[in-house]
Amino acid sequence: MNTVGSMVMSDRKKILLHTCCAPCATYPVELLLSLNTDIVLFFSNANIFPETEYAKRLESARNLSSQLNLSLIEDAYDHHAWLGHIKGLEREPERGRRCIKCFEYSLIRTAMAAQNLSIPCFTTTLTVSRHKPSKVIFEVGSHLAGFCPIDFKKNNGFSQSIELSRKYNLYRQNYCGCEFSMRVTP
Image (cartoon, rainbow, N blue to C red; front, top):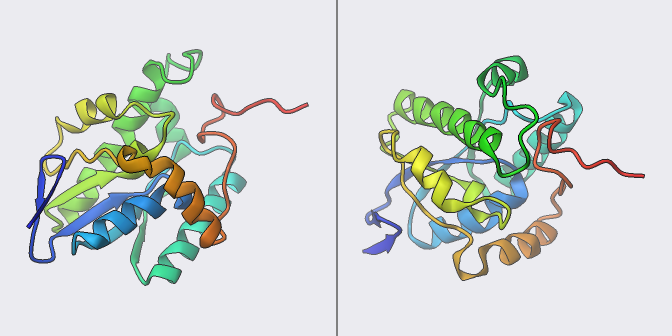
Protein backbone atom coordinates (compact mmCIF):
# COMPACT_ATOMS: atom_id res chain seq x y z
CA MET A 1 0.00 0.00 0.00
CA ASN A 2 1.31 3.47 -0.96
CA THR A 3 0.30 6.94 0.19
CA VAL A 4 0.25 9.99 -2.08
CA GLY A 5 -0.86 13.18 -0.38
CA SER A 6 -3.76 12.08 1.76
CA MET A 7 -4.78 9.36 -0.71
CA VAL A 8 -3.97 5.73 0.05
CA MET A 9 -3.43 3.71 -3.11
CA SER A 10 -4.02 -0.03 -2.94
CA ASP A 11 -5.39 -2.80 -5.08
CA ARG A 12 -5.81 -0.99 -8.39
CA LYS A 13 -7.74 2.08 -7.29
CA LYS A 14 -9.41 4.00 -10.12
CA ILE A 15 -8.88 7.75 -10.47
CA LEU A 16 -10.09 10.42 -12.88
CA LEU A 17 -7.18 12.67 -13.79
CA HIS A 18 -8.14 16.18 -14.89
CA THR A 19 -5.73 16.78 -17.73
CA CYS A 20 -4.98 20.43 -18.42
CA CYS A 21 -2.61 19.42 -21.24
CA ALA A 22 -0.67 16.35 -22.34
CA PRO A 23 2.79 17.58 -21.21
CA CYS A 24 1.50 18.25 -17.69
CA ALA A 25 -0.14 14.81 -17.62
CA THR A 26 3.05 12.86 -18.34
CA TYR A 27 4.64 12.78 -14.89
CA PRO A 28 1.35 12.42 -12.97
CA VAL A 29 0.43 9.45 -15.16
CA GLU A 30 3.80 7.79 -14.61
CA LEU A 31 3.56 8.35 -10.85
CA LEU A 32 -0.01 7.05 -10.60
CA LEU A 33 0.79 4.02 -12.76
CA SER A 34 3.74 3.23 -10.47
CA LEU A 35 1.21 3.15 -7.62
CA ASN A 36 -0.89 0.53 -9.42
CA THR A 37 -3.65 3.02 -10.23
CA ASP A 38 -6.19 2.65 -13.01
CA ILE A 39 -6.23 6.11 -14.65
CA VAL A 40 -8.87 7.72 -16.81
CA LEU A 41 -7.77 11.01 -18.37
CA PHE A 42 -10.35 13.81 -18.41
CA PHE A 43 -9.62 16.63 -20.84
CA SER A 44 -11.74 19.53 -19.60
CA ASN A 45 -10.39 22.90 -20.63
CA ALA A 46 -13.08 25.39 -21.59
CA ASN A 47 -10.63 28.16 -20.65
CA ILE A 48 -8.40 27.55 -23.67
CA PHE A 49 -8.48 30.23 -26.35
CA PRO A 50 -8.63 30.30 -29.32
CA GLU A 51 -10.44 27.13 -30.30
CA THR A 52 -7.58 26.23 -32.68
CA GLU A 53 -5.27 26.13 -29.64
CA TYR A 54 -7.80 23.95 -27.83
CA ALA A 55 -7.75 21.54 -30.79
CA LYS A 56 -3.93 21.31 -30.70
CA ARG A 57 -3.93 20.52 -26.98
CA LEU A 58 -6.73 18.00 -27.32
CA GLU A 59 -4.89 16.23 -30.16
CA SER A 60 -1.78 16.07 -27.99
CA ALA A 61 -3.82 14.56 -25.13
CA ARG A 62 -5.23 11.98 -27.57
CA ASN A 63 -1.68 11.22 -28.69
CA LEU A 64 -0.52 10.65 -25.11
CA SER A 65 -3.53 8.50 -24.21
CA SER A 66 -2.92 6.39 -27.30
CA GLN A 67 0.80 5.95 -26.57
CA LEU A 68 0.09 4.93 -22.97
CA ASN A 69 -3.08 2.96 -23.73
CA LEU A 70 -5.20 5.05 -21.37
CA SER A 71 -8.85 5.99 -21.65
CA LEU A 72 -9.49 9.64 -22.46
CA ILE A 73 -12.79 11.36 -21.77
CA GLU A 74 -13.29 14.65 -23.61
CA ASP A 75 -15.46 17.27 -21.92
CA ALA A 76 -17.49 19.68 -24.05
CA TYR A 77 -15.63 22.82 -25.06
CA ASP A 78 -17.75 25.74 -23.86
CA HIS A 79 -15.55 28.81 -23.68
CA HIS A 80 -18.60 31.05 -23.34
CA ALA A 81 -19.64 29.28 -20.11
CA TRP A 82 -16.09 29.58 -18.77
CA LEU A 83 -16.07 33.32 -19.54
CA GLY A 84 -19.31 33.62 -17.58
CA HIS A 85 -17.69 31.84 -14.63
CA ILE A 86 -14.75 34.25 -14.46
CA LYS A 87 -16.78 37.37 -15.37
CA GLY A 88 -15.46 40.50 -13.66
CA LEU A 89 -11.97 39.03 -13.22
CA GLU A 90 -10.69 39.51 -16.77
CA ARG A 91 -8.13 42.13 -15.72
CA GLU A 92 -6.72 40.08 -12.86
CA PRO A 93 -3.02 39.21 -13.15
CA GLU A 94 -1.83 35.67 -13.75
CA ARG A 95 -2.00 33.65 -10.50
CA GLY A 96 -4.70 36.03 -9.25
CA ARG A 97 -8.39 35.57 -8.50
CA ARG A 98 -9.25 34.74 -12.13
CA CYS A 99 -6.98 31.71 -11.98
CA ILE A 100 -8.63 30.52 -8.77
CA LYS A 101 -12.05 30.73 -10.47
CA CYS A 102 -10.60 28.89 -13.46
CA PHE A 103 -9.31 26.08 -11.21
CA GLU A 104 -12.75 25.96 -9.62
CA TYR A 105 -14.49 25.65 -12.99
CA SER A 106 -12.26 22.77 -14.13
CA LEU A 107 -12.39 20.93 -10.82
CA ILE A 108 -16.18 21.19 -10.60
CA ARG A 109 -16.45 19.78 -14.13
CA THR A 110 -14.08 16.96 -13.15
CA ALA A 111 -15.98 16.19 -9.92
CA MET A 112 -19.23 15.94 -11.89
CA ALA A 113 -17.60 13.66 -14.46
CA ALA A 114 -16.14 11.42 -11.74
CA GLN A 115 -19.56 11.11 -10.16
CA ASN A 116 -21.24 10.37 -13.51
CA LEU A 117 -18.58 7.75 -14.32
CA SER A 118 -18.75 6.21 -10.81
CA ILE A 119 -15.04 6.88 -10.31
CA PRO A 120 -14.43 7.32 -6.56
CA CYS A 121 -11.73 9.97 -6.70
CA PHE A 122 -10.18 12.57 -8.93
CA THR A 123 -7.19 14.86 -9.02
CA THR A 124 -5.61 17.32 -11.43
CA THR A 125 -2.42 17.71 -13.42
CA LEU A 126 -2.50 21.43 -12.66
CA THR A 127 -0.31 20.83 -9.60
CA VAL A 128 2.65 19.68 -11.69
CA SER A 129 3.25 23.20 -13.00
CA ARG A 130 5.67 25.43 -11.15
CA HIS A 131 3.38 28.28 -12.22
CA LYS A 132 0.35 26.93 -10.33
CA PRO A 133 0.15 27.11 -6.51
CA SER A 134 -0.80 23.62 -5.31
CA LYS A 135 -2.01 24.97 -1.98
CA VAL A 136 -4.64 27.10 -3.77
CA ILE A 137 -5.71 24.19 -5.99
CA PHE A 138 -6.04 21.97 -2.89
CA GLU A 139 -8.20 24.60 -1.19
CA VAL A 140 -10.52 24.78 -4.20
CA GLY A 141 -10.67 20.99 -4.48
CA SER A 142 -11.26 20.47 -0.76
CA HIS A 143 -14.89 21.53 -1.24
CA LEU A 144 -15.54 18.80 -3.81
CA ALA A 145 -16.42 15.20 -3.00
CA GLY A 146 -13.77 12.74 -4.14
CA PHE A 147 -10.95 15.25 -4.61
CA CYS A 148 -7.50 13.78 -3.89
CA PRO A 149 -4.85 16.44 -3.24
CA ILE A 150 -1.67 15.27 -4.96
CA ASP A 151 1.19 17.71 -5.45
CA PHE A 152 2.74 16.42 -8.65
CA LYS A 153 5.48 19.06 -8.67
CA LYS A 154 7.20 17.20 -5.81
CA ASN A 155 10.22 15.05 -6.75
CA ASN A 156 10.99 17.36 -9.68
CA GLY A 157 7.66 16.56 -11.29
CA PHE A 158 7.72 19.69 -13.46
CA SER A 159 11.20 18.95 -14.82
CA GLN A 160 10.26 15.34 -15.38
CA SER A 161 7.12 16.39 -17.26
CA ILE A 162 9.26 18.44 -19.66
CA GLU A 163 11.54 15.50 -20.35
CA LEU A 164 8.64 13.09 -20.73
CA SER A 165 6.81 15.41 -23.11
CA ARG A 166 9.91 15.35 -25.32
CA LYS A 167 10.05 11.56 -25.08
CA TYR A 168 6.41 11.29 -26.20
CA ASN A 169 6.84 14.07 -28.78
CA LEU A 170 3.98 16.16 -27.39
CA TYR A 171 2.91 19.66 -28.36
CA ARG A 172 4.00 22.16 -25.68
CA GLN A 173 2.16 25.44 -25.52
CA ASN A 174 3.72 28.74 -24.40
CA TYR A 175 0.83 30.12 -22.32
CA CYS A 176 -1.59 28.74 -19.76
CA GLY A 177 -4.64 28.76 -21.98
CA CYS A 178 -7.06 31.66 -21.76
CA GLU A 179 -6.88 34.84 -23.80
CA PHE A 180 -5.92 36.71 -20.65
CA SER A 181 -2.78 34.61 -20.18
CA MET A 182 -1.52 34.85 -23.76
CA ARG A 183 1.94 36.33 -24.09
CA VAL A 184 2.34 39.01 -26.71
CA THR A 185 5.18 37.99 -28.98
CA PRO A 186 6.99 40.60 -31.09
